[in-house]
Amino acid sequence: MRVLVVGVGGVGGYLAYKLIKCGVDVTIKARGEHLKAIKENGLKIIDVDKEDIVYPKTKIEGIYDIVFVTTKSYHLDDVIKEIKSYINENTRVVPILNGIGHFEKFKNLDAKILKACIYILSNIEKVGVIYKKTPLFYLCIEDDEKVKEIFKNCNDLKIKFSREIEKDIWKKYLFISTFATLQSYYQKPTGWIMQEKRDEVEKFLDEVIKIAKKEGIDLKEEKERVIKQALNIPYNSKMSMQIDFEKGNKTEVDNLTGYLAKKSEFINFYYKKLKNSLKSS
Image (cartoon, rainbow, N blue to C red; front, side, top):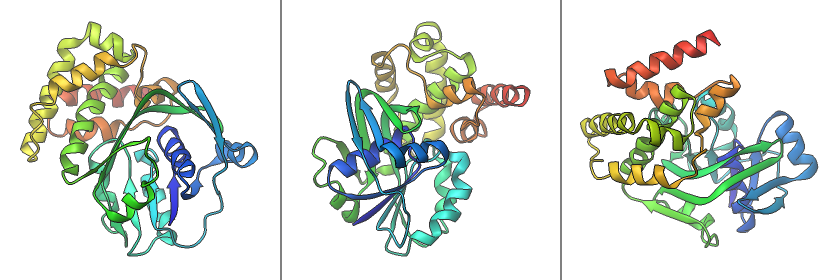
């Protein structure tokens, strides 16, 4: 089967690398200097303390069986237009982004849309290089036989083919919306947030759990798991949204915080402050 990975950042780059190592026919869609470096030197992966290089295809042509979309949410409108030429009604399109609201953007594509989320700490170290900082890799993806087929030889990857994908996505959203928002607001890493702002973390989690319940998702048992997870990751860990704020880049604040801000005055306070900081920067 032919696989296209759209977006070769921390998630897409590592996913493309692992699929290639599993023997899958993978083409990537990247941009600018990052793409140029990959074409010239291959895609380099630093997986905690191990390094490897693969050489993905970069010429996009024909129809693909599976398309993974791993870009930032603010690129989606353009990406969805671009991939229409490479899909048909038998293609599986798998958005792997942070958040909840973005799935609505895919509803008019002539393809089967599979929902997914991923737990991974990785980013572009420099052009052509992906750095995965911890052993963490956990992909939850909607149960589908075609997708199962491409992962059949990836025995070292932790993958859940879920029949409760909505709940699995909300579990991830509970974690990332809380820490992406609070980290970006305070411009501090996870460890500092847990040490200094534990009460705010718990209040934020409670608000997200309340919103999820109104949408039919019960997350009441997830609060302690999220807190434990946050305490166990490296002190200086940062969500990609905080990194984007620090660099003055576009951010996913609308997708990660804005969706919840419409439903919670408590969260709307952070959202308005973050949006104002973007306007003034």
